[in-house]
Image (cartoon, rainbow, N blue to C red):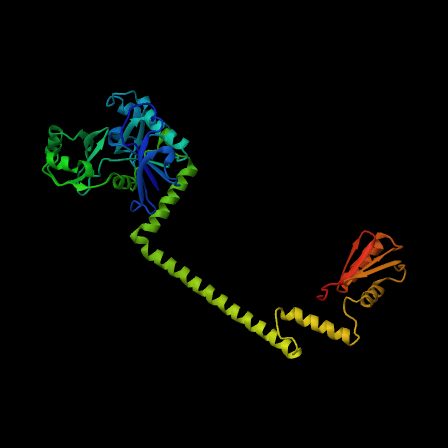
Length: 406
């Protein structure tokens, strides 16, 4: 998969032409194999492109989701969140958490729809259409261990501390008053992550040891989540969703520990099949070589003067033809043999041909005083008798079905 993320959150309606993105690429969804930063047109190509939204691009809201038809869900969210948002709900994109069920509290993510649409269109125009949209940080589940997560990172040339817990997500500048408030609000166990460039500052401001996590490694963690913000107006087509699920299932089967015995079993079965095919091929080659050697031996026993064997069946036919000629026997492609075959196949009422042309074992008989049906019947009779016969205009071409070699 290819994972991309805008390094900064800009409220412009569309990304600036040539704006760069952070990107990471993984072949197995378990570790990053390539990463970098470049414009959309220069990104590597991949079948699955995951767009990761910066922390400040999203706001998070907890609400009770009543039972409502899917077609009315968007309108319901707008009405429920209208008093909590500073912007017009019509300008925002909403997405529900994965597995949201009616009658239960759910998390709803909101972001500027024009900003998101601009990045999606830019990636589409660059030939890298997005298949999933995920957040870079999200509310944790109530049973999460540890129950909170803090991530020190940089955006817009500013250091930020993004925090997540079952209560929601916050993003504050990495400054003394702000982080002191964040530390006081979370005295319990937590996981503290930091970009290498911000780790020293974060540890100076907080009496806390931070775990180093590069930006591209964080992108991979985000892509591994079960979030997908591509909903409502930004939802994928049914075919795209099926392809996405198929790729996810294939990736899970290929990498999950629980499927390791099945993978080993399939690999063993394929290896056994390969060994069996190779053994069968070796046996067939050995049998063919034995037959070829038997033919060569038969040829040299029958014709001792043949010392170089290149094609035993062909050479044996040539030697037999020479013996027939030396003994005065007619060969299958001699003119007398062709005339005899033609005489046996011709009906009594059919007038013989008036012209005969013989060359290289092929007889051409023309000048027939007969209608086409009679000639067609003669050709059919010759073919039934084992001859290669056909009409070429007004001439009958006749030769042995398998003419002897020259």
